[in-house]
Length: 282
Image (cartoon, rainbow, N blue to C red):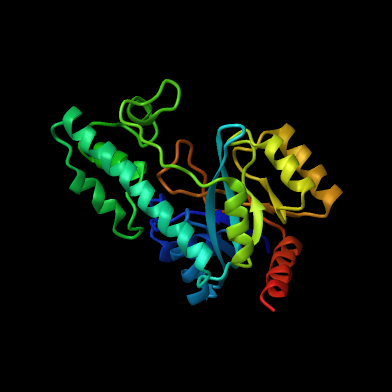
């Protein structure tokens, strides 16, 4: 049976606790899942500590964030089977946790001045599992107070939008994508370029593929355009790359919800990930 290799829990910006995710995969007939929370070792360690749960095989994973400074956009890289003891990976996760917290705490303080009902402490309740305050946690608190009718609706764009820029948006300084790729490599991870359509990343992806910098591409993702998907399939065929699929599940913390199992990875591609990971651990 196929697997869903891109999911998020309360260990980053998802709404569902990590221990409740595997059974969701089991209920839709999947036998493999990767919980790939953002820039954290929590989902990695959970995968190693729970190799099988609810009859579902868990692949240790994290989704690393980098930045393409040439084109001015974020980049997400799925790292499967990384070494949780890797010093480089630990540094990356510690740095991103610190920077995200600083930005969101500043945003929360500014929101207190806009909405007198809001208190930062309420938003921090949603950061207990992750140790990181995310914008989604702030929005959950605002929704509870009746100050927003959804997580990623009109209020979110007023506060945190990109264009026009939100009134309290503070973005962390991201690490250059080449450095993040080096970190993933040092950790022995199998690296898959995530959802290239989301950040309009096809020019960067073409470069990285030609340079042999990624092991695979996330083909099946709810946000990938048909044109990008077709080109990504062709790139995988040309360069012998792994083809993955993942729902990018965030539970309720998503503009358009998709249940676990919406996008999946075939068995033969999962086997390729595991084989490559095994080779790198020798």
